Image (cartoon, rainbow, N blue to C red; front, top):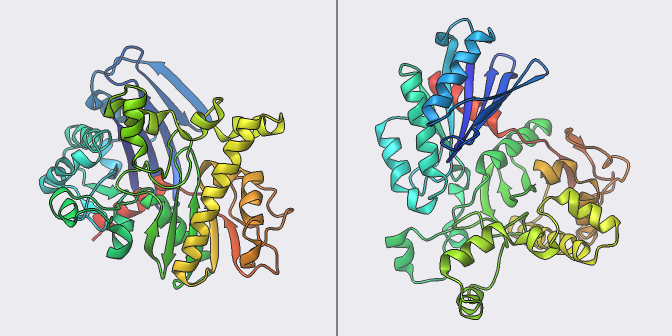
Length: 393
């Protein structure tokens, strides 16, 4: 069976087509600058990269060109070979605890929770409507970033603000990267043949989050009401004292929107280093002795370690510590620096085993009380797997 995973942004549409019998990627790519001058697609197929500038006024244009290319390249003989489409959906609020077949009620749900994710949910709806128009008879599934975290107990998701803010305004910890955290949980449980593990998962990339997982269910996560909360990230500040916001508004004559933008887009690695939001550039700066890059890396490592320590206590110990995503899978030095700070918990890294990128590997020493793994994530495949499961019922 063939399933397309779709991740629609406000001006982009990312896709991957899987052959689900083997879980092989048949073709993948990105349509970008939709509705903007200079729109184009980049398609990866059979080891080649196809790039072409094309007019893309809407997401429907992107979907139609994509489907046409699938036939032209003979990836499929006809569009009837596409059995389902899985869509990334960012914010499902309290309503969606798992992936669902998309119908009108689901689309209304995405609209209802759009105020909680104004940059993402409307874009997700654009992607869904584009494929509904292009493939009207093909079943589609919504896979929510927030769903995996709906198992978090109330004392971990509620904020100490007036309770009416939660009851009337939906203010609570939602958590994100849930599809990735669920994929890692599924993968490591299969590797160790154990569904009753205490896992601390570190999804470390330009956007980063940690999750505490017990018996396959999330009990806590670092991101909060929005993806801004938690550890230091590429451009996001992570946890800060909320009183900084009104203070800096007055001190720098900024609007609330301007401050929010800075906290999301000009803080984190970029804000501290003044150099880059990319960890590779930060590591290069560290090697060059750049004091602000050294500070950036130390702050990042300390913020990750503090959440690991917190979750170690919450879980009552830990069986497996996992690293995933761009930094987690490729940051050899970062992984070592994090684990070295956990020696007091009996967690030790094997330097030789840790000399690896992007490959499922145990990287802990034999005497480590907690297994440490590098586990490559695959959110697109998780979306396709959920889609296959639901359309096969």
